[in-house]
Amino acid sequence: MEKILDYNTQRAPLRLPEYGRIIYDMVGQLKDIEDKEKRSQQARAVVKVMELLNPQVRSQENYEQKLWDHLYIIADYDLDIDAPYPMPERAGLEARPMPVPINKKPVKATHYGRNIESIIDLIAGLEDGDDKTSLIRSLAIYMRQQYLIWNKDSVADETIFADIEKLSEGRIRVPQGIELSKIAYDANFSRPGVAPKGGSSQRQGGKRRFQKKNFYKQK
Image (cartoon, rainbow, N blue to C red; front, side, top):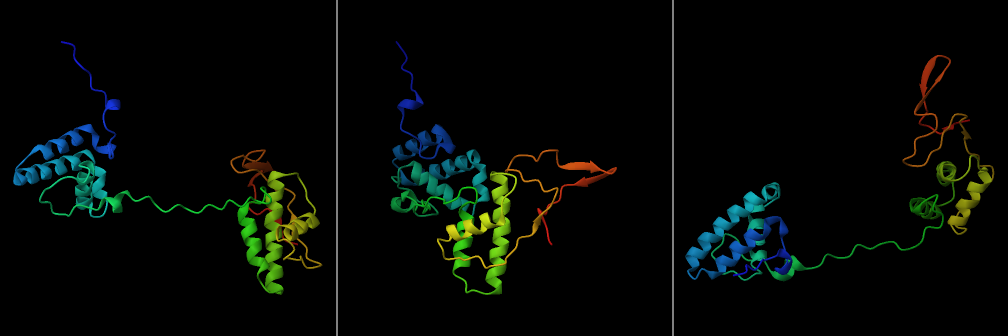
């Protein structure tokens, strides 16, 4: 007689695959036990086996209740037993999570990033004064750094100021006379994940010196 093979692909999908097909078969046999007391006793034994097969569950809070919840889930919420925990509601466990809102607004300047736009929005809402001017200057220095990473080797301060005003849609006017700190002669701008040319250190005058973390020297 030809033996008929039973493939997993032909079986019902596992809701909790970490327990394996054997636990599903054991739960199916539980339902065939007519005596409720024996059925409840065997259910406790099945939960013990589930704990052995999934030991990492012990690190979770109230892991025993989670195991019993998993038993009910495997049984498709159709299991009449005397258990230490009540059967969970299907709607509560199978409810879809709330979707995470995604900002689909396009980035105006990719080399600056979306965070720069958020900072500009915050600064635009401040009252004019020394504090706002200081923040604009600090923002311009950082934007210049980002610009040099993704573009060319030099950029005029006026270009950065124009970008601030453009990204703010005219809500920020860079004060007259504001100056940025000078770029250090040995500053090395590199893209994330790309090592700067010449390695992480250089030798000069017989002494080993590491590249400076600060990109700018103050006047």
